[in-house]
Length: 471
Image (tube, rainbow, N blue to C red; front, side, top):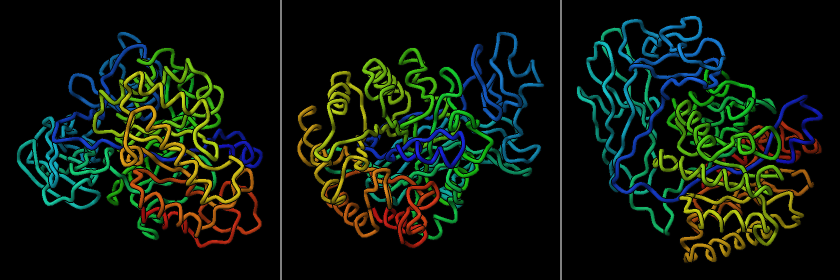
């Protein structure tokens, strides 16, 4: 987001971006899929402090950032790696359960997982802080769910000493209509590196919002991902925020890239390397959605990098069928520009199963932000229909909107009433994603201009988030 270029003058050295959050299409249809949350240790790999890996069935946490070498296997270098105690903080608790598989119907989600090490009395399945099941084996079925509803569960082993660390899994029941499916809750952006970030639990309690898009994953050097390019994937403020969101029954969407910063697309030399970097984030965070904010000349306008990202996303989706894949990009007032149309057509040509195409209708010379957003969205719909041969309903079901609350960089004004109109239009037309930039700015400061921690207009605290929660 271009707001970053202005805010950087106020917030020294922070690289930022803008975009829209991620939603999806294609709900899983009664098919199992594995979500592996701890990657196997490998040599010649850059690990950040707090990273978690698996080696010979044991999970280890990284004590010092380093690039691994042969012979530096976690058991051999206690200065670099420490075995987890099960993650629950209780010595003697079982080890973390293995990878979780899911299968779904229109009213249930079935989970199965690998057995935990150590003494195990049984397993508990949580949705947020609410226990949904307790079993002695390694599978459970959660029934009585609504059709086309998305749920995130955490599986923990337990014994008399306590509980293990959890394994997360997200799945969507069948029954979605309109050719896309898997409509997700509105998920405004939350950026922990800028703009006086609020506690997401406080915002959830005040607004009822259930999902956030966490920004931004950038390169910390080469093809190594990190929050904002410098914060470790686990162990910091970002993980604390994600833990809070999940503990309250919410889910997270993780955004990669943006308008500025050192991005993975140009730094990862192959689609396989790009997919591997994304996989590190999925393993560390357990998101419901990964959102790729493809902007600027280095990714959006560089077709070599565009293709690298698209081919990488094909691998990501193959390896993580239950994780929704979203691409987010800018627009004109009448729809995607030539670079956006090329991105759509190329995703079709390469067979990339993108769940949702999200446009950012602002900083585009808007005057009537409601009508301009509708016109841009109709342009996106037409581009998707042309590329894929979809009906109107199918195109809408693969579409999203990511706006900017209050004043944009170009002084475009989106008021709470305008955002409500946009939300209602998106909902009535079957769009499957709604986001805005950013929760950090969802506070009043009339006359305050375009700044990082408020909207520049008169409003109530968290008013745009409350509206987005109604999506």
